[in-house]
Length: 109
Length: 114
Image (cartoon, rainbow over all chains, first blue to last red):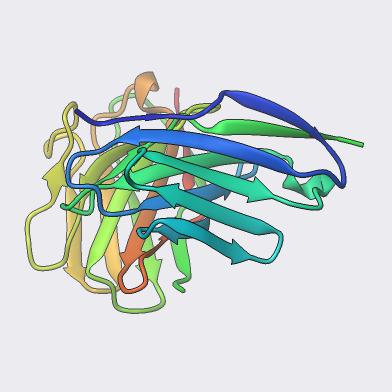
């Protein structure tokens, strides 16, 4: 079957590091996406992983383990503007995306 | 990357009427998707609209209710037909770029049906 799970909400402190986890079960797995979505706005593409390992883009990094069906998004040096929902989505071999429900990240000063 | 625009950005419509949403992309893309999103919820895929083929609808969505056109590689429309208040939502178009895979969303159309 197709399933994807991520925590509903997380809280972190400005300047700290937070890791948002995502587990998936996807037939014909063809990669995993992470998106950021501020309230009232469209999702913004952050990363795509298809190979195992960590990919870094500035303050954001994304990790994938295909054997474990697991990914995480790591946010460093948190800023207040990072308060948003973070969506993970796995892609199958037909280029269909299966979406998680999103993790609402709250940053406190 | 891709820059996507949508029209209208928002509309308030009466029950029983139809609204056509336009999606324009600044580059040629094969794979385009239409989603809707209720406030505070995740994205729900309505259909895949690849140029050169009929749109493929997800379970719960039918062509009579949500007809889609994809006349070329930079443009698509989604019509919400015979609207009811349950159709009130944000409608988003999206494109998938390949190698490397990146997916971009339009700014969305906020639809309210009264």
